[in-house]
Image (cartoon, rainbow, N blue to C red; front, side, top):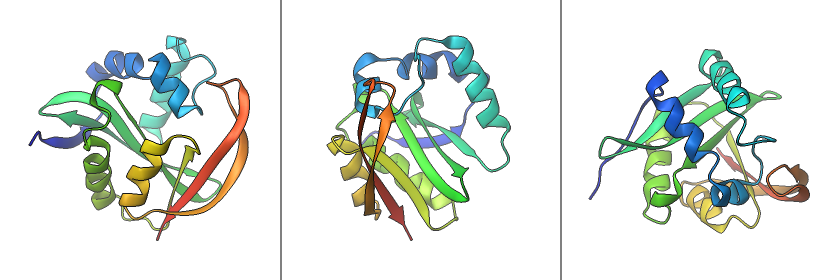
Length: 157
């Protein structure tokens, strides 16, 4: 079985993460993305802010040592939320679930919250398998789809 691991995000990871986060199919699936996924300057500013924030944990996800995505926790209106992004080439192989399990072992804050487009069955499955439960839905504007869509809100106690 391939080894999934987490490590701090380094400067050398930024080009690959930018490319992953602008893949059209990945952007459509994630839905709640940057206004313009091709805007490198905005990406660099956002990542610099995340990496400097004291209430954010950001980790690179690796598969057999190769960068395949990122996972992080951050605080929004007093709630700690998690998010992750994996390169589409590794979807459907259990990597998100393994990365999430590793991440949950390092982030001790509970409850944790997560959100996913309600039609993102893969991500919702990963979150439920990790113990998150659905606590509601909201309709929000999804820049990647240029429309308001339903978003599922989950919680891990």
